[in-house]
Amino acid sequence: DTAVSQTPKYLVTQMGNDKSIKCEQNLGHDTMYWYKQDSKKFLKIMFSYNNKELIINETVPNRFSPKSPDKAHLNLHINSLELGDSAVYFCASSHGTQGTEAFFGQGTRLTVV
Amino acid sequence: GENVEQHPSTLSVQEGDSAVIKCTYSDSASNYFPWYKQELGKRPQLIIDIRSNVGEKKDQRIAVTLNKTAKHFSLHITETQPEDSAVYFCAAKDDKIIFGKGTRLHILP
Figure 1 (tube, each protein chain N blue to C red):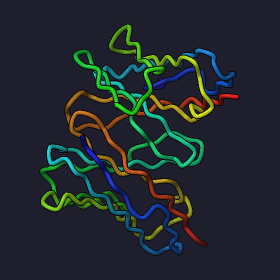
Figure 2: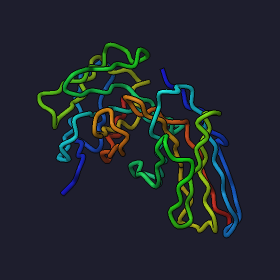
Figure 3: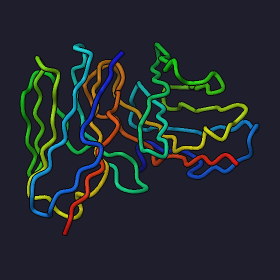
């Protein structure tokens, strides 16, 4: 079974649209993350979220918003998409504040045209 | 917040030689230091990690060292093979995982 799964794998959309990427983990982790990987391969944290706290990277535009219906899901909503939003978005999960591995989803390649 | 610096950004080594990637971190509260390998088109995957109460850890051809005082940690790959070619990321974790900018490792035949 896939531990961290994201959908869709590929997403092509026009500027100005609103889109969502879904993420689910079946590992029983209590912390989930969204990372953006740009063309230079930098992995930048966007959000980390557990059942207590949402931590937002202050450089993330407020067009991006995480939504967590429950501990196993952390979806990413993006409003008014811009060309610069094109990237690969990775969801990940881990055990909260403990020093443990983060498991990544397969990534969603978002292309804004 | 935590800041992780990683060097070099690109590294080419002859097959069979060793590769070393170095990272520094800024937040002394960070207590967990994983290394991830990302092959082309794939997700990052953990290859080795070290916790702040340990100075060195080895797993076959891969070793990691940590100097808490200097806030340095390094990845060492010995006897490199073609399949080691990938992008490697160091990271530091307190309450969230912050990654370095990655090192693209090329193994030359």
